[in-house]
Length: 247
Image 1 (cartoon, rainbow, N blue to C red):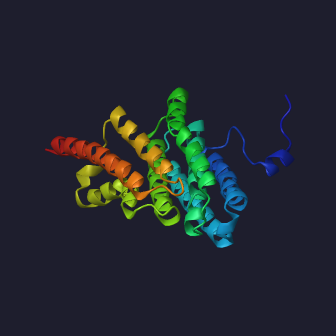
Image 2 (cartoon, rainbow, N blue to C red):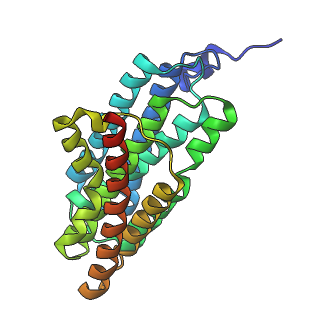
Image 3 (tube, helix red, strand yellow):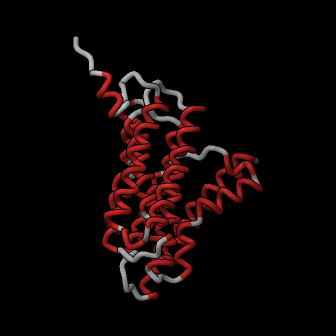
């Protein structure tokens, strides 16, 4: 049986036998190139500094994810799910570029956001199909979702001119995290709820729609208030469940 030449591995140093963190690191480099490429092709007017910030945000997120994988990943294989989540992190990080550079590019922003949202759920499905589900993978996915919502909310306000109340759509996860620092029982595991996933999808769809240029404030505020109400109900139900479980 023939083996690949060492030259091939030097060009793309990824072997099937490599440990998960090494495979993740190689894919992370590819993701960094993707962020820079999207910045140069779609958000060039934002400037080199803004592109560098987008790559830096991606590098930070990928580094934290790699550290967690190294410490807590329970499987011998990386799995496709983590690769998809890493791709989503790259797409979300590319959206930081027009935010920092205040570069209006609604078509590109909506396209990237739609692709990222369409991939949400694919990673979880892949993890279950491969039998590689893990708490660290679920946490990685959730953190990417949180950054995604915050970046889209900030884009809608800073670049798209939406009312400031839209920013609240990107804050629920972080407000919950701050509350957990005060009441640690809020960090306890929660049951998976289909209704919560539906609310999260509605939240993201609303944030993508809010990227449309020239959207009247009244058409932005009305759905924002509706989604905020749904998020309040979803998070409130989880808080009550955790409080009762604590008691």
